[in-house]
Length: 232
Picture 1 (cartoon, helix red, strand yellow):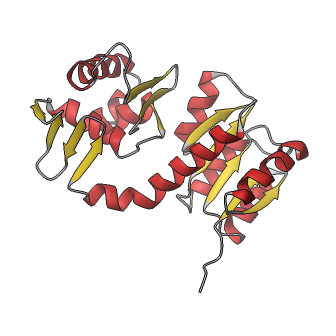
Picture 2 (cartoon, helix red, strand yellow):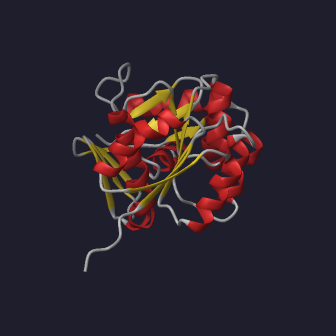
């Protein structure tokens, strides 16, 4: 017996954008539910049981950040922000509020669908990833059981903080983690504003793990926002 297609909820007040998204989302095998206000979006998030939410921040009734916060009170489903707001502080605020990724308008459908796949893959594999004995990303191999990291088969010595920073990024592979999130998770809540720590430790990780630290393939900077670990 075939299972029902997963639902993607689009909370977006611009009807042309919803019309633009529908063919691509349905062609990928998903069911689309759409609404034009934040309040209706929150209601649909609880009633339609979506597997993922695409959310515009600039809604006519309540701010998209409030929508994120309310959904996060009871659900961990992936939330991808789709917004014309290009100010980095607003991207950071959305990610810190609980969004999983951020795409700025104008955007390409191919990029959006790729981000959807990454967010869903991460959401459905979190428990698997946490229990997986080895995580492989290109030339980088991380053995979570033995707490060993190898590059091209050779053992790499990492300090405890370097290892924790790396594994925190790896467990959110493909998704943006803000500087504040990383500082909180790795250094603790008292260090949430000390971004210089991140710059130093990311530089050290790149020197140890990337073939070309000046042009990293895995430890990616999202300018003004945070960092992303890219597996491919």
